[in-house]
Length: 319
Image 1 (cartoon, helix red, strand yellow):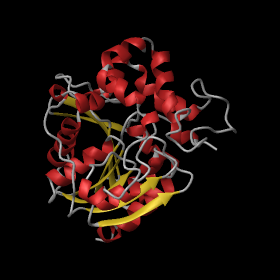
Image 2: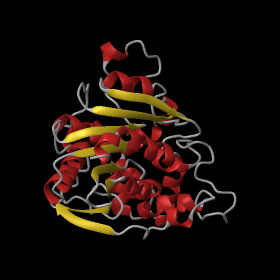
Image 3: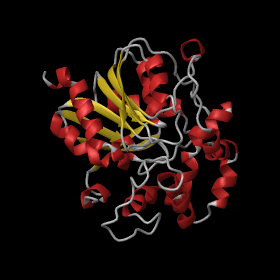
């Protein structure tokens, strides 16, 4: 049964800070605890962490959950660039420069996965450790040559190609708020990124999109045409170097302590994600496969994420 608080957009206070000429919106709960930066992916906003913010703060974390530039309540970048490097630089400026944290624990998946991986490699003395789930990973040929399923499913990649190579055309096709929300709704339902039924609640009246009030909640921020178009920027930058604000760092990481979680019902990420992640991060815990969980781990398996982060960081929380 859906807890009404989980789909309340006003559940947590939203703060704002201007960094690198972009107004970034973020939730900040448990101030004074161990800094924990939670980074959403696509098609998500900070709302995907709504179920875990409160218990993570109660465990002793200072939970910082931003909307990436171009997403949710954050502004669209004046330069039109919304790539991994830009997101990483924004978040370092927010958490280190504005909030003043000298160390941080990172949490991320999907687009947030490359962002936290970049931060960990770029600022190894700043990033204490990392929790990673259902994320793009580097392909390390020598380490992964024996893996048979180290590529995303081709039949699930049509959205990636269209958003990356024809973002303006797709944005034009999705001309109304309703069309935009219905497009996003498919990623929570019929594309089976999530475990079947994960965003449906039979005890609740049907929602307007995808038969679910939860899907309504997650699609609402994408009704805005400018933000939907901006959200395609990460895909666009995969194909067009001119859409990158800098070179992202993603590769073998021999240093950062990394907890690996895998929602194994995911139909879009590599089937061998868990094995690939173990090969990428030498200093890892897990991987732990999550039953009845797909792509959206903080929403589909909140207890696993919270309890895993709490135990993984128990030494930090005890200080």
